[in-house]
Length: 106
Image: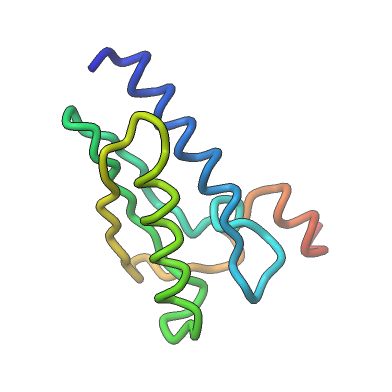
């Protein structure tokens, strides 16, 4: 896979992630800073490393399934391999500028 094609697909993945919202916070998971890494390998498998705002998030399973489903259906992606981590733990400093503005932190 050419580097430009890989970058295009990874950008598309980021756009798809911006359509997924944390059910308890009115901001998408990308701008919340829950996505730590997006990597598309040469077999078109998207490797996503993400966290949650809290380890005991009651909607964790649904959120994870939505990410896997939407990224797995993204054009140029064969499958989504999602890794959930809590290291480093999420905090408000990971919010994008847009998320900070929307949540009133600016």
